[in-house]
Length: 137
Image (cartoon, helix red, strand yellow):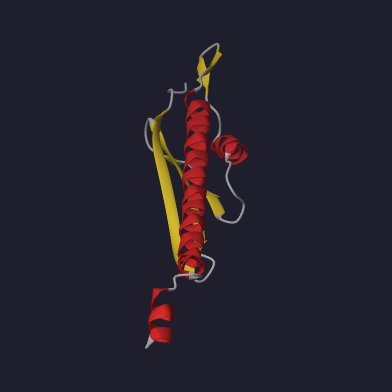
């Protein structure tokens, strides 16, 4: 009885066991925060590319009879050049969709989340911007 009571009251090594049980959860949470931050970075890169594409689409280069606007190819190339973010996802810049006096610019990002111990869902972020273009004559 005396020996059993001594073992029950002995707490040596309890901290190591608690640490061993909580370490995988802590590492998984930190890695998950890192994975989510990559999505926020990609979102910021998409917003930057859309802003630069919108700026280029609204420029009016004056001519004698009106103004010249940039072509859809030039706008798409500018947006591709201004994208930033991790390369472990897929950025897609769609061709601008023309309306009468506007264009819709779209960028999307697709990435499969990786949480060290298991694969997460595939996340797709899509951002669009409606840009009013100057009239050409």
